[in-house]
Image (cartoon, rainbow, N blue to C red; front, side, top):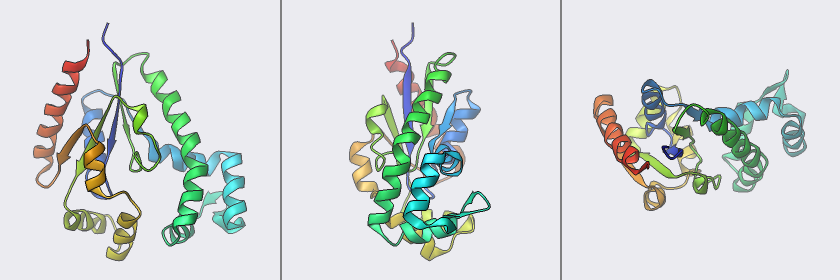
Length: 200
């Protein structure tokens, strides 16, 4: 019987981790979006909502929806508040990610988890392998701006993420995404081949 593998995909803003996740999904692998799980928990989990209201006041929710602009403004200008929010949101997100992975392992041998803050959330020990998608900073800013983010916003967000140099030392596979989508997919295929070879 093949060994079950949980594989993390991470990368900074605009690096291309979502493109990697979508490609693995197109190959028939389940891909859990832990950032989307975190957003869902912040919107719907009563205890998380109460904690965030206690921290930021009632205006952190507008008609039941998380006020993302206000949250971003608060946490990206205060390391202390960022740490507090992470300590509220990361543990239940990890739990939800593992629950979902367990379900997928019923039918799949390999499950991927896409997470921007994989290292920051202390998730790396959950994975058999971690794939880091890396791009030069200038290119990442350009991609973020194409998605409607201002240059200043992109820089602030990048400053609040762990530096790529640190991530590279900790990742099992480092893929540079500085060319075409086809080039990225070729590299992903190669990594997939290497990972499959480790399964007994």
